[in-house]
Image 1 (tube, rainbow, N blue to C red):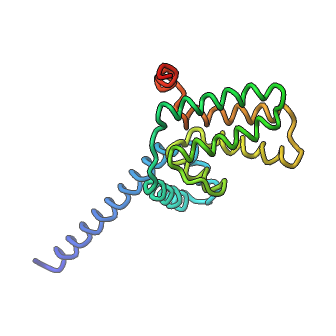
Image 2 (cartoon, helix red, strand yellow; image 1 turned 90 degrees about the vertical axis):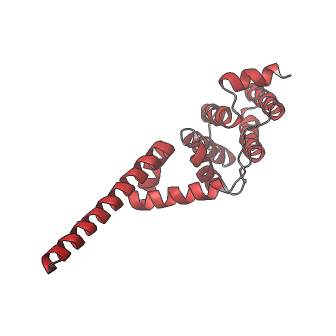
Image 3 (cartoon, rainbow, N blue to C red; image 1 turned 60 degrees about the horizontal axis):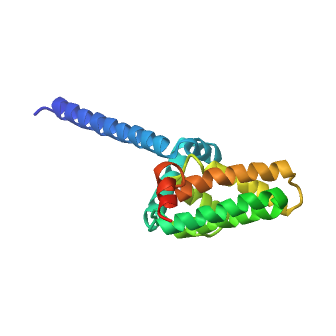
Length: 187
């Protein structure tokens, strides 16, 4: 083999390696975009770079993979659904207490599903792995609850918080479609 042929082989191997690397990055980006949905764009905005965002999202996935996340048992789902109905009914007479109780109930459902309940930001990050399309509801509801604790939330704000919490609750508790009907039927 001549020196020119050796150089050509090295160049071809290098190009194939670069091409494979680029292809793997593109595939990883597509997978993360599909899995995290709107959370992907949020991570890019927060980190300032798709590469840093993807690194953060990958770390979230690895963290959550270590948890023992599971669906709720039918009895737990039914109990949480009953609690949610009581909280919603309480909203009419006491919206401030209802929102605080809704926030607490979300934490209880997360714990029952196997999510560690630590600080809010970590909880939201953990939820984003398996619930990327509703985690923003959690953030919005929590933000309103925080404003409420400072005396800066109107009744309409509290109503919006309940709507946000309801979206997250339905997703976490599996209270939509056949799961909800099965929970009601099992009583």
